[in-house]
Amino acid sequence: MAKKSQKKGAPVAKGFGSKPILAGKASRIDSADSERFFQWLKTGGASVSKVAIADFDGLRGVAAEKTIEEGEVIVSIPSDLCLNLGSDGVNPGYAAAQLVRIEKDEERRSNGWFQPFFDMLPKYEQCDTTEFYTEDELNAIEWDAVIQETQSRVAMLRSTYEASQIGLANDIKFTWEEFLWGVYQIVSRVLTIYTNEDGAVKYLIPMIDMFNHDPASPHQLKATRDGLFQIIAGKRIFAGQQINFPYGGGNLNNDRIIQDYGFVESNNKHDVKQLILPATSEPVQGIPYACMGLDAAGLEAALNKFSTTMQDDEKLLREGEMSQRMRTAIMFRMEKKRAMVRALEELRK
Image (cartoon, rainbow, N blue to C red):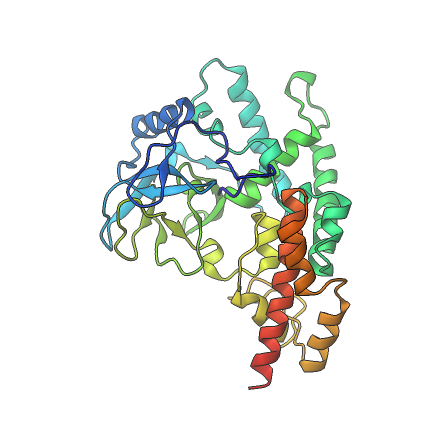
């Protein structure tokens, strides 16, 4: 699920070629890799003729090739084209190790079945979840919950990686960097599908993994009884428009978004809810984050703990020369401050 390029200067869509203009503001991405990918999808029985992979001002996403009416199937992907990566819901390292082994096996074969799909996945240098942050970039977030969870997750992943290498022959071992690449694919692109037969299973679903996030999107993911994964249009979509769907059902706060997807959502209402809903030590059903239960005095104290003001952060983002991850860290803490201001307004009504 793609995001802005991490390179300085004007953003560039990741890893693609020329940009024929679609209707609207989208530029279709036509490259040898994308052509091979679409051919592979069609050979495998996928229905993808209504969409194109496109560049939206440096952001790779999915655009409508034609008008799609409400209720229509936007894309339909057979399960045979998907990678089933198990059911562990706590440690993404297990699925990551499995994914890396599959990827390396594809590389060893001259034309592995899944290679056109692997060629479309982000490369290591494009991975931007918090596991990839330097110490300075992580500390710039200035939010203990994210910093501590990231540190704990990296420690857990390091242990999982070391265990995964025990007893492996040298030709099938993989590096820590390759493993972290796999973790990024799992946390940012894999979808957990619930069925009566199998329970919760992690799937990496080609094409569907390229739809970007919009918490207000009415489009829905559907798993059919005959083994198809589909995106269903929740409203009319015009040719050239970007098609998004809501990650996490649209219920994610920025703690989860920056750690699992590597970006920050502006004016995220769940950041406000996290601050003022009754305190919980763990996420509860329907709210996938722990709440803090802060009153006005608690919000004021939390706001004063930051080392910078919102104006300072805006100036840094406007004038500073920095990595994309540092920019995202500053955007994150700025959004937390905005959420605190909105939360204070809510409490004072």
